[in-house]
Length: 149
Image (cartoon, rainbow, N blue to C red; front, side, top):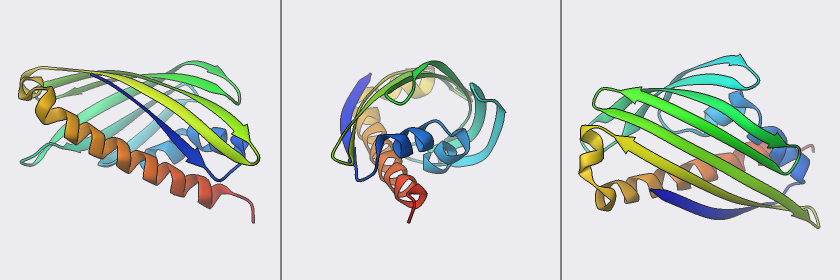
C-alpha cells in the first residue's frame, strides 16, 4: 500500500529538518509508542500498540535511516514484528522552503504480512490514513514547540 502527501509548516526548513531527524522527537509524534530505544543516530527501536479495531496490535519496530541530504531529503526503513503481523515500511520526504514556510512532500510504501494483512486494504486504508493524520498533526506541534521565540 502506497500513501503520499504534502504538509506545510510555518517554520524554517532547518527547524523542520531538526525535528524530523531527531528520533526522540519523532517518537513523540507516533501514536501508541509504549517505549523507545535509540541505538545510534541511524538506528532506533519503538515498541508500539497500533490501534486496529478491537484492541490493538503490539509490535516492535526497528527503524534505520537509509539516506539523507541535509536539509532537504531523508529516507527511512522500518521493519516491525508482532503477533500475527510483519510490517515493512519505507518512507521518505523532501523539504523545500519559501518565505519562511517549509513544504514537505512525503511518501510511504507499507507492506503488512500475516493474518492482520488479510483484513484487506479496504479496512486498513482508513486506519493508516487516521494514523498518518495523527503523526502529521503531532509533527506540526513538535515543530512549533521547537521554534525559537
